Length: 214
View (spheres, rainbow, N blue to C red):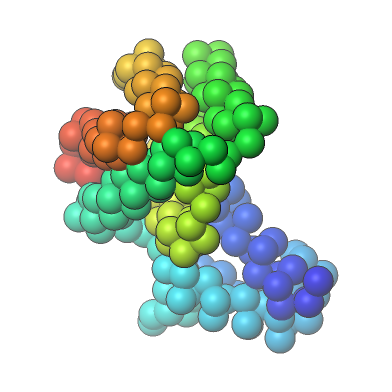
């Protein structure tokens, strides 16, 4: 893999994983030393990450984004629309017999993993499996453009919420919503899948006091 691609992926993983909290300043020198690469691929990686909306340039140099409450709500609204689309497309492909049973079964597996980790209090792992569940719906949809947009929206949400994770107040509700979405996709019911996916994201948004997710 090209050095720039590798460096970009590594820096992105550090940011999304919470190694660099929102507002932290990032320098080419520090990153090049940490990753043991030259400053050139680091510079290119930071440029790409800025276009992705994960870092921003300002008077303090390059810093990790810190979304305002309003910006976070905007991200959730975009996510709701995209996930409604991908859920509907996945159900349509299931109805047309275009999804392998094993691929569909993985969706249930991700739901199981997310619920198990969350109930055990392992919030970081629970968030990771939750994202895997939603991302797999987009994979089943077979629309690479929607998947790419969703990845970027999810990254921005996770960066802004990683350092404030708390036990969800609606664990059972989240799992139930996941199961109903799986059922709608499995039965090939596109309209129901779209509605359930949208409502699932918006129910999280409605619980946000001023935009801070929980």
